[in-house]
Length: 377
Ligand SMILES: [Zn+2]
Image 1 (cartoon, rainbow, N blue to C red):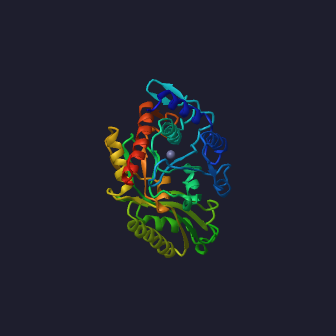
Image 2 (tube, helix red, strand yellow):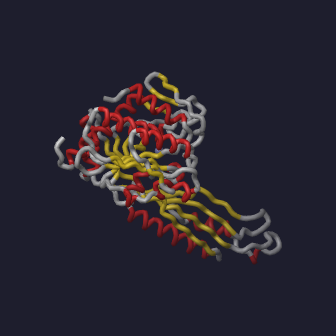
Image 3 (cartoon, rainbow, N blue to C red):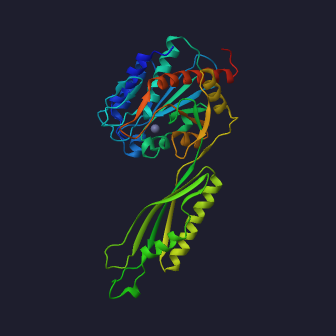
């Protein structure tokens, strides 16, 4: 089945080609070549132009060998910094970086796994439904690649992103809706010593408003935060402007909508009590995921885990991923734990055993989805 050395080699090769967010061109070219070599037709979209990067998302449609519903698998091509000149070190049972960069198992472990899966499907003449592979750019910069992808091209009605922490077997079925909130408070400048009566202090108004605002953990599903504040021009000028950046997240869309409304209303009315005017800009960063445990996409993942001896662990997370965008496009999608550890640090590593399990898991998902489609295997 899985050829351990070949899989390690694939992974080590992939991480050696830099692909820091919006600089994925070399990596994307390499992947394109590899899939063309395998007789496939990888298509690049124009996401690079849209987001100011040098590469687009790669989308590969693989005809099936059996008449069953198509399945989408997705992973991201980009890495965080420091991600130039990564050299993977096979160190006993794990693969790590040399210590001066990330490893890039996030998310190249997933890409190596999907390449290995495709090689196994072909060399063992296994049956598979039409498969779709989506490799996105700039995931680490706010899911920008996935947000620019045209999901009407996708035929699959279920999808698996391979981009979650946690061991193979962990299946993320819940993640939050997430809003970014930006406040701008306008006051009136005046000389602080000679003419303060004529000024309106935007910092004071912002402070008054913030003191009345909910912040931190709101309930078990909901949080909010103010992360940046800046304003004023000089010590001796009544501050005429103050800007605050904040955010709110919740696993419940209703709760997030209510909280966001409150965060706006309270702020505006409190700032006005100081004579200032506040503008509030709200942007949805990504939609939430809240999949039914009984839904097909989840059931198939669970059965696949059990089939290869993994205990399925249905779980939630506090952040977004490409799975948020895929679900938002109307395609039910779980995010699978692939065993990558200490991601976004120079200590990032992955166990070789987990890489192998990931391949087995994807193969099992493919097999289970054929069964679910009612085709004979
Ligand atoms: Zn990732």
